[in-house]
Image (cartoon, rainbow, N blue to C red; front, top):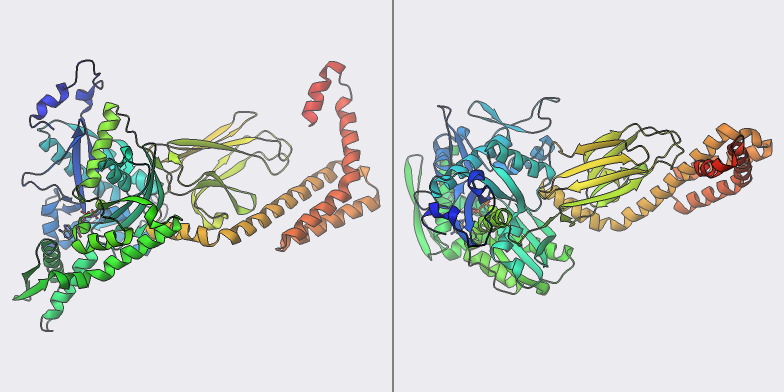
Length: 639
Ligand code: ADP
Ligand code: MG
């Protein structure tokens, strides 16, 4: 990139069409909005510059300090303020993006701030809020403060030009709610989101893997508080997330804790340690850990209870403390590779992401597990932002490296009997629109309730409910005659809109799916794992339920026919049919699918003569008083 930023906008080759209105719409950057740190980068002609502050620092700690005077401070200064005013400082807010009360319960104890649960029915629904320095803030608002600071940083680094658009990265497992929350935060910060891109995909893009050998790549991301492993499949320049896994509460912070505990245990046991002092010990531990990446040993001081203690540590001692955490990441990698049904040797390359992958121990273990040296030329804490910047340039300047992401979990709707009908399968490249037709279950049914769910299991109660809505105004028709087309549309940012349309009348309902809270990584992993473990049971359950639904449908049809044409039957015939209906109902209450099928067959047998008599009567009625040239219509209508 040119040092003279002013020239940038006028630089284009003769004949090359500049993007219209680029000057007015402002520059587009790539933002890695991290749990611990955020980074912003800008790309021009595929040359990426990571934008730094006046001290030459690229990483912006994702920490916000709400000061007494009402002002807001973000970054390194906010992180330092944790020591003096821990109750005014918020960190790790990304963990709560798009989360609801249920998720927060599962994160209890891992959050360094007070979370308030809004009373039921309050505006904003189930979204959690934080009490910070006398203010009540949503995770979206807090993230927006971080994004505003990032935007300001970028504008300063770009010599005051306005930065208005960005590609923002999100974890591959972020669901609809978390993605929506991220976009909302950007909007509050006055940033137009060109695209939300998965973090591992951005990292792969930074290494130019989109134009490299087609095949499988692993992205190993160990940050401050989270670990993520993704297996990407690159094909024709498109990345698909084949499998993801990780641990939402495993990262460099755990190593800091282990080191801090070690330091504290070296001090003579004595007076209680205050919360502020623990934080100080943690900060020293982090410094020691980071130093030992490049030096073999060192000595650090901790001031506690007015006493200064000195602590020596070698790289080998650090590695012994860190090893259990690193081994956990390797175990998770093993599980994900297995889930993906591949052999590690099939993986063409491994990308390192996250500050903690600077540790030599991590690099060694990753290299051992994957049997190859990982790619680590690009700063692991900047690589995601670099990829995002490249993508921002591609999107604004019309390059052909257009990236596609995929749906992380299958999306479907509930059908009779609580069965999930998948409309968009997991790992479908987005944007995508897919439709499926459904029909009514009862005669004259005028409304249909649509329940949108997410997950891999066959039954609704084992998937996650995203939204419900009702399609009304279906014209009265016989059961099974109405055709209702349900369309799922996932946009480039991974956000879902569902619409349902009754084909005869065109009556239509839409719903943009914005669930009030999302899934935690653990739940996501559990859902995927369960879908594999229970696949067989699920299928059996599904077949039984389908048979039962079919059977009940037949009973309903017979009953409604009896309601109209019972006079066609003799007493004996009527009794036989009633008995057959009862047999079906009994079978449906059990769990034997063959019994259900057999009972339905007997019912069909028992109603055969009745059906024929009805058919005769129907045709006679249809023909009554109809002239020959309308005969076709009448038959068509009677079908
Ligand atoms: P996140 O993705 O969660 O925002 P980062 O990728 O910025 O996080 O990683 C932050 C973590 O990386 C912190 O735990 C930090 O201590 C660790 N880290 C940064 N540099 C080093 C280093 N040289 N050696 C060991 N750990 C490091
Ligand atoms: Mg990160």
